[in-house]
Length: 560
Image 1: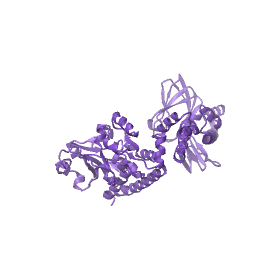
Image 2: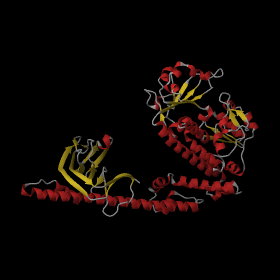
Image 3: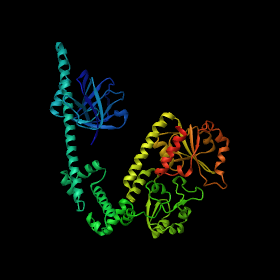
Image 4: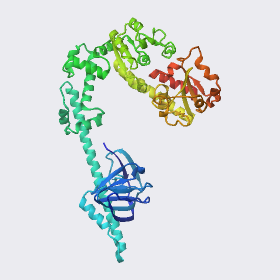
């Protein structure tokens, strides 16, 4: 439904007359139409003009013959620029006040009762009825003269109220009609969805569904997407996939029979669409729901453990070690560098039923993995960890558990956000990754890793270097800034979170040499003892367990 702003007048209103005048401008001429003390009613009689300067000078809108706009008193300068050979318009300035006014912004709802009225501030609308409106406008423009000036003024005052009442009444009628039409459309969309629930195995078309909804076929897809967020056929496909998941997890039917039951012509097409939608093949989905599958998922173990699915092996890195925070001490390890070199002996020895990989390896690796077992490649997007958790929940029949985990996480983050806002009161925070070769400061641009927790989930105030206020001016894609020695010296964040990366260390502890430097020792956070070292893999991971532990770490050092 269209976003509009209305003012609901809940008590008697009053007018104070300003003036009425008729103006005429030629093409490309501009007239200033604003008096900041008054509301304005601008009615275009002939031609067309661009209304400019509304909304603080942003944008422009065309007013054509037979249209009007009602503008509230404002400090912004309003102008009309003729875009036709001649534009003739009337301007009425007046004070419009009520003892009680409620401003409502957003999709309009039918809330008017009794004498309440919706005032169409700022909207370009048609004058209805035309003849009556222009007749009244003409009367209002007549000058007062002679001994009857006072009487004429009172007459025009009443006629102007009548004009505004006519505008308001017509506008309310339009809003009601729009609301009624929206209700009819919503009911129709609901009917078509109910029909899909019963006839999902039929070869349904958009035209058929639109006919069931009693909505024109050209309108139906747009209205359906506005109501559900999906196109009709996408919604139908997802409904079929949900039915397929139930049949796969609870029954023994062959894939070809399931395909026919949910409306697919053959098993091949069904399997392809299922994998496109769910992420894994139907057969693997069934196995995942019947038994504990043997899974290897490097860098994704966090999601498995959160859902109670234990991997048969976990990755280990020569420089970074393994994810100790997951407490998988009994789970064997394999060298992550094997993946980089596409040497998969250790993975093959574990005989996985399913291999889950992030999309940051060479295609040769994926081909080798597919020869070993079923392989699913997930897009590498550390910002979308909630989506990954939900997908894993879907993979292993633990969707409800995934949602409960997310609800618990959001509650934990919300409680921490309130406590930290009270404790820090706007103090700034920076997150550094230190190695022997560089110091990287993560910005609040792009999210991922600890940044999404610090600045998004907990709402902490990010520190920005002077002269680098825009995060996008940083290193690479803007998510990090490689700090020079001079920039490090100017780092004045109130609190520093630091992880040490051993990647470039030729000798043990080489990444910590920075701590004894003058540049480091001179930092305000160092002097105040407000520097906090965190576990590297916990903070450089973005699973729900690692993010929960980050919140605990942050609360431990900042809020206690």
